[in-house]
Image 1 (cartoon, helix red, strand yellow):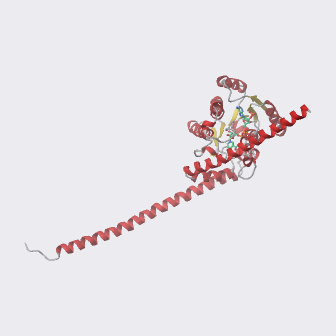
Image 2 (image 1 turned 180 degrees about the vertical axis):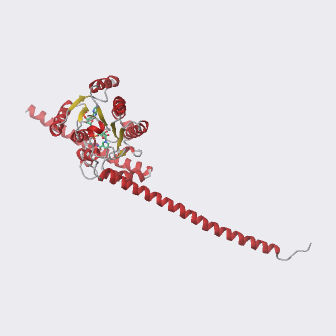
Image 3 (image 1 turned 90 degrees about the horizontal axis):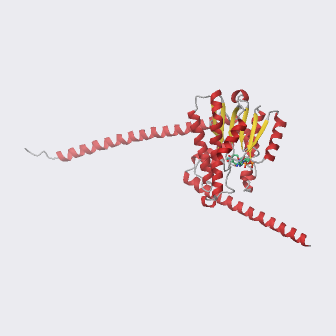
Length: 358
Ligand SMILES: NC(=O)c1ccc[n+]([C@@H]2O[C@H](COP(=O)([O-])OP(=O)(O)OC[C@H]3O[C@@H](n4cnc5c(N)ncnc54)[C@H](OP(=O)(O)O)[C@@H]3O)[C@@H](O)[C@H]2O)c1
């Protein structure tokens, strides 16, 4: 067979042209595909942002539908940790809406004061139960509470009681007793109170259970590790219940406030100054109560919702780094204040001793 000159070269050229054409088509196709993926991603983001804004407007800014609270939930509300702070302010808001209130906390003097104020302003019945949710005898504690609440038709349970460390710190600087208190008060109380009162709500086909979690549970928060972990428990707890009891007519809500100026934040002067981002308990509760039945999970307060949006997009490493820096400086502030307080009281003691001697 004779060799046809130029055949190899021609077929290679032909092949190369083919490859080039294919590649160009591929690039165009890939570019088109990427453009579609990009467009879908942008649409998703725009949709997420828009629905967040619409939900925030609906939850926080549009007026609450006129709700007959007694009719919707039942005649009594139990609010744990309600002698002061958010619990007391929330109880007051419920009383304004016509619900009778059972207050629960340790200090009888503060409870009596709260009871008298609410009764005077709101013309509802207010009772209280003096309890320590950190009690050593947990079984006896809930037997006692259950006995006290036995004759009441409880429509709403607000699992508000909660404690933090004295100031932010790492695990090994927190004493064992405090850790048990955190477990019993932050986790135990909400779990056992709900277990006690949910059956009657399910039976009646109406009622509401609220937990007060915390913005610190949205991501891992060093130097508040146990506190934020107990709050994360509450998030999971209430969302799980909402699913398990979704056909019962009972409303479940998780409130996730960021900083609110109360006794709990009293270790820091900066966190005790109220402003838009750090409301006082009354402002917070007034806003939070209007979100019940409108949102299953909310900060309860619009400026905190803006904080939550930021918290949700901040990468975890940055959140943890920022939390550690913030909590280190809050601890320093708290320790300085404690040292100054100790100095003042020791100098007062010296003056008193000197006065006694002369
Ligand atoms: N303040 C904030 O920045 C913030 C932020 C996010 C979430 N939260 C959550 O909001 C909830 C309320 O906090 P708050 O700031 O209002 O706290 P708070 O001002 O310290 O009030 C706590 C309430 O709980 C009661 N209490 C404390 N330990 C108790 C115990 N062992 N047994 C029974 N009652 C007890 C206290 O009354 P007695 O002393 O009379 O017992 C008081 O009525 C908590 O769950 C907290 O984790 C607060």
